[in-house]
Length: 370
Image (cartoon, rainbow, N blue to C red; front, side, top):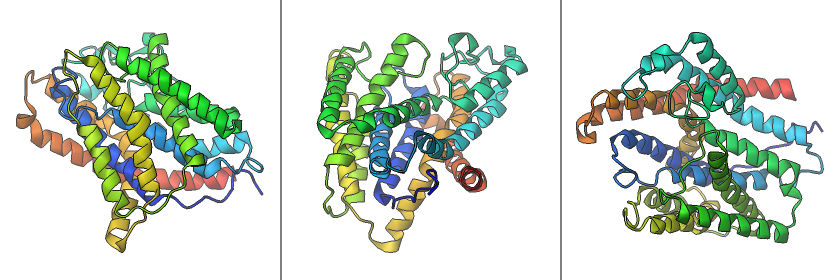
């Protein structure tokens, strides 16, 4: 058997849908962000924790899908499957970001119009590989790894975790993996409670400190998800999609804990969510079944849209951020029609990206790589 054509296991439909729920909340978080005066006043206050949830969910799904297949699966075969799944939309997201780049010149990015076309194209081509750009290549001014599509940083660390799993961590026994995960949890807690911001944000800049933040945010949840896939035995939980979605939403919409006087309390809250609550949500989702055609369609749609929604939405959010920045002090209560239009546009763009680009390209890649 070709090691890249190993049969795909059935999906956990609820887990796919939870990824979609988190992606929708991420859009809301990014649309509220330009109106916040600080981390404390952000309306969707913990929306950024969706990234940490994605990492944990990915680790669980990777373990479920691949852990017992390495007798026939090679490293090259595994990486081809991951590239086939992730890379087409990475390329699309960078391309869309490049197309819209010059149109987002604004008060918050006043130097955009000074960026030569050749530099924009070089940054776009580097973005296609997901390799982070150095600060000297920053063309937007936010010191992002991927200034054409901000969310690309998390995909970079997703690849790092996948490679670490494939080249070595997969061989660890459950006991050894447990020790590794406990140590990673301790590092995460230390970072969260000592971070001057009182949270786990960061990881999108190519500096030693920010790369450490990105690895800290990735290593525990991804490999905790892997461990969970090995040791947890899902049972049956009624209305699992409802309860897991509600719990995830509560975590991500939770207001800031501790205020500005007790920042460590918020770090402790986020550590608790990542280490305890997120694995519980994944376990609940894996223990449920979808009842009725209506719920099945909703879960399937959320699952199908989750990745294209996450990877393309910020190319539209750039326009909204620019619009808000050019109208200093505009409130969300005043700009909500534009926010709603951006939100709806993100959904439409994601669906079009899925049907007109992602699915056809992945089908073509499967035919070429098999």
